Image 1 (cartoon, one colour):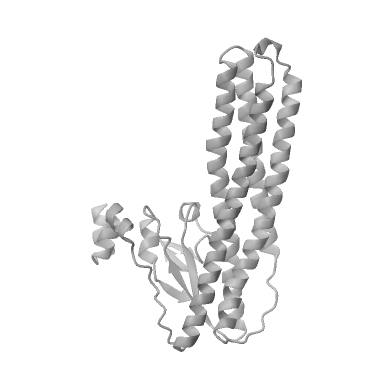
Image 2: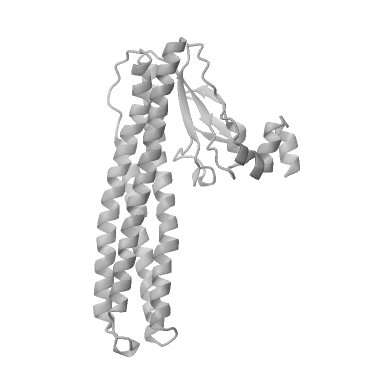
Length: 302
């Protein structure tokens, strides 16, 4: 690519990255808002029950709890299902738009959506399970209150805490990992279609920029391979960050991405992500990487 093409590519690439970040944050906020609504409704149900636990009607309480959780399941699964679709479409656009902006004219077919459907179904099941686990926890707390093992106040507090902390944390992980997987899978498949259409692509591992990231992922930063080849990360063949086939230890809460570049161009876009001052100040591994220490020296120092 010449410099004008590079600028156009980088601008489109940056816009796609911002779109991805916005989708993840917006979906996470919306799912958390649904959890907060469920928590408030659950607290209202419990608070409106008689203050004497001996007067509690378990059947009536369970019916109300099931109603609140069913509403949570319906709303959250619809939200995450739509978001997975948007992530897939965004991953395709993350290849198409830079190609078009840089003046590459390619005609590519629609991606096979079989994997998208499987990913969406899996994600919906994971989000639904939040309600199942919450329901079990809530009924356990009510049971403790009914046998006099804890106060009504403590029951309400414990229920609210579970929905606030445990469920919120789990929902955040599901949203981030599932949408990232859908986006990354679509981009990688599209890049391989681009090669079939006449524009061979390379992909570059770009680290997350988190303070406490995986050392192996930081070491992979800037590594470039052909679009149809895997990265070797920690001894594992990983097609791209968030690869659903990769070991869970390499993908959960990972913030890395893959960048794609036309292969037969002399582009000068940077492959590596510079360390920030905060990263260098708060993570000794990054200080050592910055100083140019070898992998052997880094591992020896751990």
